[in-house]
Length: 544
Picture 1 (tube, rainbow, N blue to C red):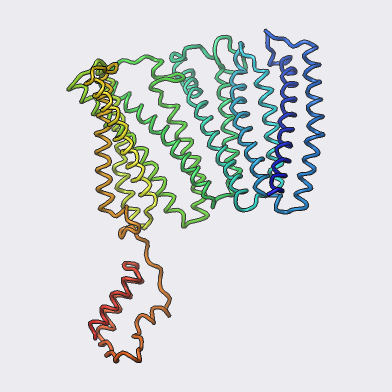
Picture 2: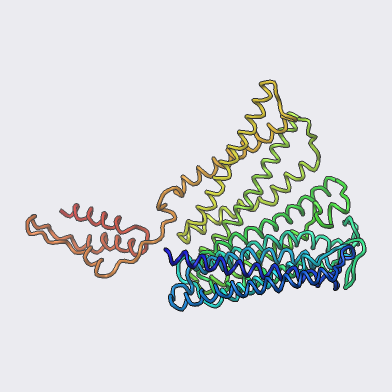
């Protein structure tokens, strides 16, 4: 315990000194970069600024070298004296979590730096200096982490949290950058910039009024490179449960964007059929309401990358192939089911509004949105049927159970939240203190409540009938293991009992047919071992 606290102290001081040195480097770089292409026209650094930042950098590096170097020497000595410290939990915790905090900040701010390079009114010397210093700190920490291999247990868990956690965070950062960037690129290249609020330019130049499309593309590529790099770092960790869980989450995240693109396609088709006019800014441009290319491209890229990484696991471990495929199908079906039933709730709300109108106008777009949501997710019904059939055939019920429990949990929340909203709106209106537009609020809660009841009823009944709530459902029970020949022989022979009267031997036809059929069923996996023993005991009683 005391030695563990000693190691905690060493790594806290060591990493604190590294951060101190990075701050000094950042301040010095900011002053230097402000006199180059990152020049700030409104704040030109003086000679005094250069001397002060340079002096602070030297002081910070000197103190970091002395104090941090001493503690790093103590860390190395501790690892030489105790081999468990080389890949221990304390070391892996501090190094990995320091990288988790450092790299996403560096990549996110670095992406902003690159995108702002093409804008004439931007001052990027400060964020550029921060990016370089943060990346230098991350590179040092990663180099130090790679010098040792983590031990089994908590140490390797910390490393996996770092590798897969940062990869997921980078995916979130990428999505926030991808959508507006691709939207503006598509608008500028194919629509002549009609959907953008500000004009843009292309090439190695500085835009005077808007962003530069080349710098925007480069900023997105900057994030993509680090995202793929972290995927490469963990490509050999194929047997890790952490890997599969985080990759399944990322696959679901990407599939949401695919459904978003499909939903917008259906919405545009319905609005066109209903002859609803749209402006150019609603179809293309950054943040366009009906932008299709941006979410669809992001979703397809994300799904393709994570399916490729999951496929590597199934190639190395063929036994995991069925479970992986069923899990992907369950995630896909769950997201599509949420879309479908959300569309049903929105359609029901429109029907209620048609019957009992509130102060919120019921527009043509309202019907288009509801129908588009239902069309986007209606394919989940087929996926549900296929998932049940394949789960029964493979005797693997875990993905199906996860899918059913996800829908049941969502439906119960819909019942609780929708019922509470409707009851609250109706109660306040009955007591003479209604909410603003209480009818629409009550109708929304009522629609959500009704759909929640329908979904809960459907999946409760089907789950009970199929035995999903049982500990070992018969339809999804894995086959019983094959019994050794010696054990089977003991089952077919009658035990001798010197006290009890002798039992007449079984007739030849019973021995050859009845017991043989029981053993055939046992080896085929249609019955369990206990059932086989019970049947044989029944045959013995009949023989007596």
